[in-house]
Length: 249
Ligand code: ADP
Ligand code: MG
Ligand code: MG
Image (tube, rainbow, N blue to C red; front, top):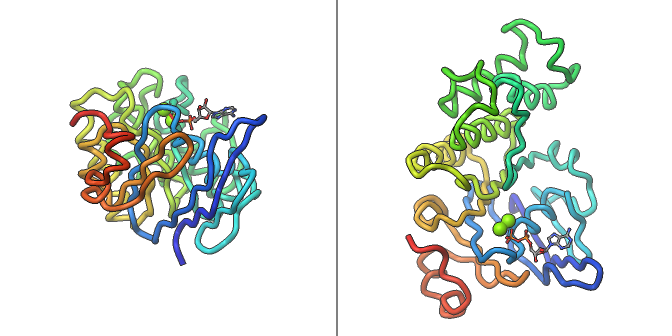
């Protein structure tokens, strides 16, 4: 069974058709890039998969389990994790505190940074491992708000990893990141996919990044899925070419 199955999903809000008849499935372990112009419905698709929004038509299954209408936190328990287009950090907390909150949410126990226990507890150990995984060990006691955009994105990925997800949705992970930080972030995403075996969907405008990482590309346009295929096939598709070619490489 696929890691993710989206079946005839539509979303209508107040008479406006935001998404129409979107169907695709993603086998476990695959990485899929999602491209398309602004307003195409990419983030909306992620909101539907993660349960932030409920579809007005169709169904969504994770690992063969129907999650249509299932709330966000129960999808996290089913192994779904995501990052957001805009930053989701607590800027006044340190890198370690931010990641530790996510580890705590998964491991259970009291949900507090005021009572910050010693380095020996399970959540702190997990958080330190995830911070090491994204190469930020030296900055673990720095306030997250003081980091560069690139490092903030790395912290967000460490927070994601602390939830130990099997299916990951990344919404523009390179947005606002200095070009010098792009290769490091790409490498972190590749490791998440290859070493952890995560299934990944990634919205990204940097076409060179997308094409270098993914197995398949999904093209969204005006709330529809125009194509989902290998990068070569998608780039050669005349329908895609006339609708959207992505940002120049
Ligand atoms: P993308 O991520 O591809 O840039 P979005 O998914 O953010 O596009 O938006 C798709 C379209 O849906 C846009 O026209 C946006 O204005 C609209 N939209 C998204 N969410 C809502 C909402 N909650 N209410 C009304 N319109 C929405
Ligand atoms: Mg956008
Ligand atoms: Mg978006």
